[in-house]
Image 1 (cartoon, helix red, strand yellow):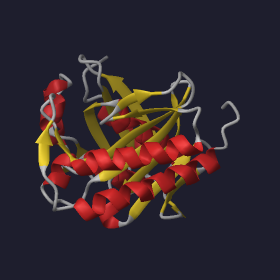
Image 2 (cartoon, helix red, strand yellow):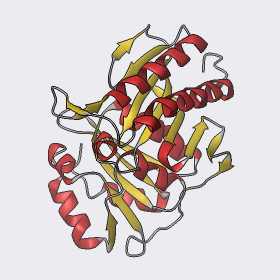
Image 3 (tube, one colour):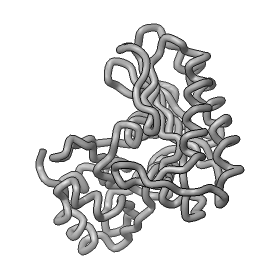
Image 4 (cartoon, one colour):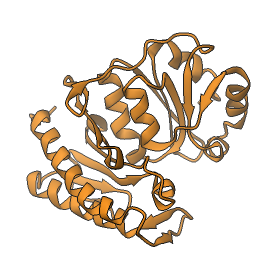
Length: 254
């Protein structure tokens, strides 16, 4: 892994998340919402948090690149930080406290470190390759459920299934899975890591939506299947190893 000290990098990522919290929480339920060119919402909290994260990561690892949702890409072709300052901006903008901050470190195209922070809930999931996954410092594991009839399964927004060409998969899930719930965005991902949600299907994702989860699920003892949709975006099926292959069969073949 090029000699990266992942434990040290994790400490820096956690510090960056602290700085993001300091920008986000004072603005929660007290910030104007704008609409970006792609139709998605953005607030000054998103921008301020990403600036704070970039500044802290850049000071600690000046040779690493950074890719963020709000300010794009900078730096070279080596290791890259991938940042989503507020994942779940729709909920954040409506005063719903289930938004997250996502930070991942990618080397040679592979996520090697991930962080999902839930600022309003004071919960942080952090892990790195070979280091396990912890919630507020305590190790967590994904569910080991194997029966979809007993499982609690989460999903992203139905329109994302449409964009991914997978509306039939959503319809089938709604018909066949008794406990199907829409714990969306990084919050849903975090609930899978902690074992509360047995597995999740989340489609039409950007790299900053997916990278942290891809490494954290494996470190929490789970399985994560990544698909690419017709528009080039990513789809993740992740959680209990015994459920992931069953759920992946619901999706169209790549």
